[in-house]
Image (cartoon, rainbow, N blue to C red; front, side, top):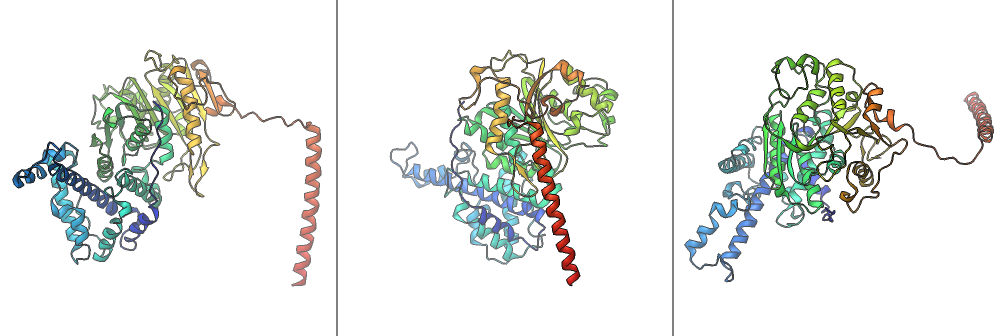
Length: 538
């Protein structure tokens, strides 16, 4: 499936951050999202309703339309028929929950009450047709420290035509506004943002590698839904249809789950995301997903494996041998494997320690996964990719299509591909590194060249044949991994990058270095003497 051109973005970052700063002083930065994102969600639902109503109005007055009528009663019936809206995944929004109503009342002293009431009405309206959306918009403005002027200012700023889906119907503007804020709020929240946010360039890399074109997509630690949104973007950029994917997710924090539901509803996606602890209270015990894309919490201790049933079907062996209370990393792995379909693939962000841990409950699982050919690829990530943790990380790709019987991928049951990206990425700020488009394409194409049948490689693939590259990638046999005591650190296998020979003899290099060093020592002594002389003059 070829890659299509993505529509250019509208430049609205300055307006967005102005809107968030309306809250400054009354709300902590890490709480901005709780106020701004529900507003954006209401605006989106309201605008979709207005756009569909205008469309139906035009149809009933168009003589060439099947809807055409001059009967006022029939016109009103069409405009108020819930099915005419639901067929387009739109809901009839009562006047007091529309954005125009909030905008008209933005200067009122009781605007905080008006907004909370609007949330109540919209929440009840959605719940009639989507019970799973009940509670998505809690009453938060009245009990906040925000002033009426601040709330009104926020409404007015978000009313900017640049931020209107109605004014920019082809731009997915409100979805991108939401995504922008999620990233910005993660910067403000720091380590606490790990519940709901994985940096976009990491998610893009994971999605580009496993290519979720169609089927069931699952994230057992879905946060605010970034994995799902990036999967949708991948699909759209390659000319796919979102009706060909089904989304399932689980999240243990209620507030974060609300963010996720809003995010997915903004994208007009069909989804089933549920509340609960995926390790101890799996809400989808029978789900078999074609793709799992997930960034679970790293190194969770005291997660109570004793509460698991002895015959838990996710476990590879006896509970006491294949779990440890000291770290849940490999319980996550067993959970993901249990949820893969017969040809499914999982892309999992994991702490680097998972590649080498010798704890019995972890190493036993890792050995089992290697011996049973479950691991397709390991990617070592560079530092500073995450806003929310300094823990070094990697990506595990697990796959059930390694036998080559699906027609798209070659047989590779006796191999694991190791990729080291530790030298890749660009520093966007002093604290944050991001993968560039070129970085993402390079890694994805490397994996595809190794995994895919040549005929199944995309037209944009730089190479249709895979080869090991010193310091970057290496396809190791399972026997090689077993000889390394099942350690999965890519550096063990890719080695060091080959240094180009510049043709200068070693002896000549050493002579030049010595001469340079002696010259620098002399300059240093001269500077030291001048500094001492200046002190004496004081």
